[in-house]
Every structure is written in C-alpha cells, then in structure tokens.
Amino acid sequence: MPVQSATDPASASHEDILAPGHLGDLTRIVSRDMVDAALAETGAHSTRMRKLPARVTVYLLLAAALFETIGHLAVWRKLTCALDPARIPRISAAALWQARTRLGPAPLRALFDLLRGPVSAIRTPGARFHGLLVCALDGTYLDTADSPHLRSCLGKGSNQHTCAVGYPQICLSALVACGTRAVIDAAFGPRTAGETAYGRHLCASLRPGMIVLLDRGFSSNTFLAGAADTGADFLARLNGVRRPPVLHRLGDGSFLSRIGGVRVRVIECAITITTSQGRRTGAYRLATTLLDHRAHSAADLVGLYHERWEIESAYFAIKKTILGRRVLRSRTPAGIAQEVYALLVAYQALRIAIADAVGTAPGTDPDRAGFSVALEAARDQAIRAANTTEDTTIDLIGTIGARVLNNLLPPRRLRISPRAVKRPLSRYAYKSLNIDRRSYKATVKIDLLTGATSP
Image (spheres, helix red, strand yellow):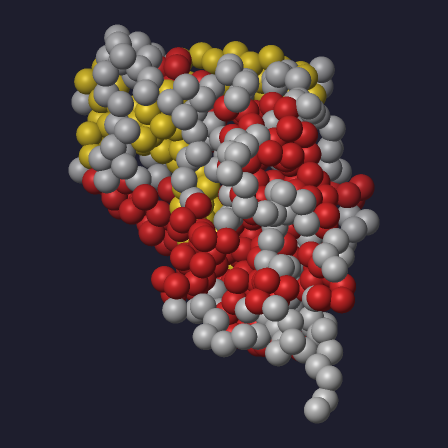
C-alpha cells in the first residue's frame, strides 16, 4: 500500500487546506463567513476537496491586491510562510492560474457589494454637511497589460499624430464618501465608454439624505436630471460656457435657475490663491438643488465643493499607494474585472479598519489617519498570519487600527500643488515639460459674484 505524502490533498486535513485562506488582521473585516456567503451567492463554492479551494483563492486574490509588486506565487508564499510547511500543499503557478480562472470575477464582485458603503457614523467629523452625507462622484483610468488581446478589447489612446500611445486602459468611476474616503459604489469598463457612462450606473446608489459633488464632466442636463431623480441633492461645477438663465436673484448673490428641467440655485464666485510664487484667480459657477440660501449660504457651499478633492485622494491611494502606478497583472477582460474588484475590496477593508479605529477616538478627523500606515500594517499581519482565528472578544481597533492611532498625521493644513502629468511617456521629460512638483503653503480668498458678472 503506497504511503501518501503530507502534500497530497487526500492526506491533508480540511483545516490544513483552508489554513492559507486568511488576510491577516483584515480577516476580522473580510471574514470567512462573508467570503463563504459571496461564494454561495454566486455558485462558486468548491464542490470537492482541492489543493486550492474557492475560499483560499479569494483570499489569495485579496492578498495579491495588497502585494501588487509580486506575482501570485510569491503572494502564496507570503500567506503560508508563517504556517507549518509540512501541512501546506505545494502549489504551482499553473495551479494558481487555473484556480483564478475557475473562480471568475463574480465572487469578488459579491464580496465588494457586501463591504461597500460610507463606513461613517453620525458624528464622524467631516462626513456630513447640515445632516447630508457628503459624497463625490468622478472617474479615473487604470493601465492594463499591453497585450494584443487587450489592445483589441480595450483599444489604446492616440496622440496628435494619430499614433497609438500608452497602455490599454479601463475607466473606473466611483462614488466615494468624502469624510472617510470609503467607496459607496463603483463601475468600470473600457475607457471608450467614458466616465459619465459608468457614472450613470452609480446614480442607483444615490439616496435622499446625500449630497453628491460633481465635476464639470458630470454637469450635463441629462446627468444632473438623473441625479436629482434619485432624491439626493447635488453640488456641481458647471462648464464655463454655460450661462443658465437668472430667474430670481437671492439675498446672498446666488440666483434660482433651471437646468435640464431641474430647479437649481446657481452660485458664481472668484477664488484667489496666493502663494510665495504669486497669485492666481479662477472663476467658478456652481449649481445645487439646495435652494434655501438662508439654510445653506453660498459661502458654505463654495467651501463644501472643495471636499470634492477627497475622491482624488482616494484614487491616489488606490493607484499610487497600493498599485504603485503599475499596470494591472491580468491579461484577459475577466481577469481584469476580478483584479479590480479584489483591489476595491482590499481598499474598502482598509478604510473600514481606519474608520473603526478613528471612531474610538472621539473628535478625531479620519483625514489624520495615514492610509500608507494601514497598508503596511496589513501587509505585515498577512505575512505573519496574525489575528486570523475567530475570537469571542470583539476588537474594533485591531493591530492595524492601533498602528494608525499611534501614527496620526497632524491636522491638515492648507496647501496647493500644481496639476501636472504624473507619468509622461518619457521618464526624462520632466525638465522639457517644465513641471513644478513642489507644494506651496497658500492663502485662499473667495469673492461671491453678486451681480450679472459671468466667469
């Protein structure tokens, strides 16, 4: 009778095979029961004993989102390095690829649906404006592998010489809670559809009691009417060439108007930013469904619109802090969807860990929590396979939260940085493009335009 080795799935116990299914300290947020529920909902749970069960594959993909600099086989070694090597099955790169292909993107999407949300409490500093949950909706682009298959599926951008340049890209549009930078909903696909097309899908997640901040790209009549139909309020910057009719001038200088059949209030202002390098003035025209100028002053709304930048900070955390501005690993559309949902789940889990920790320190603004601190702590705990077992004691902070609270950032100060191309085609192009990458301390002056003056 042959002797079975410890790496044979027939000889390994059920617990041994499932042992690599963890995410370190984040396992308390992305629990095994939650993963099993997502697998059951999508019909992707394992029907027989495998070296790589579906649950383990899900955690492997989430860990890969934390360790974007290495391949899936190296991620597997990190998840198992703190476990007993004699009881862990040996896995090949081909087996990992087959497991990911077998799983598909649906379980990761279901897991994202279970986790997405604003993750803020009623009294979370900066989360609400006059009782309304402050959100922002915008789009960004993620690079994918420059393979023939993806080029045919996604296409490529072009320059002034009509030459294909750069990487194939997908467009990611997200609805983000400005107070916590958590993702409420997201939609993505080929960039040819445009961010507004995916943004229209996100309107289904808008609710009464929200106010959504919109950039000029989302200020079309159709989009604003669709957002208003959800019952949520909006504050949108209008294109400079649009001049809505003045129906009634209000006491604070704003005026009532109508855009796309929606009754709005329009605020015109000039914002002057002064730094050591000089002074610059920009004109803004904002439209909102908050019509009462006594309850919501024009000055307060202009200040609120600045919070729209929080979604850019969220995108920076995903694209720079986690991805490191690298291209996505996957080389198929299904693999890209799987990878993006895993990236969103990992990001949301970190935001939940941060919000839980900050919530234990009343009055602490979530802006002071360092996302990179939380990410590095999560990576450390995943490698150590720490805090992965079920415990009857509920710890809202966890190891990640404790490290965040011990390394809070100072209160945010006003500063500006010029917008510039972050990654030109040539790494040596910065001097020729004359890009100034320094940040400057600044003072801001807001002048409301109370007459007929137009930007």
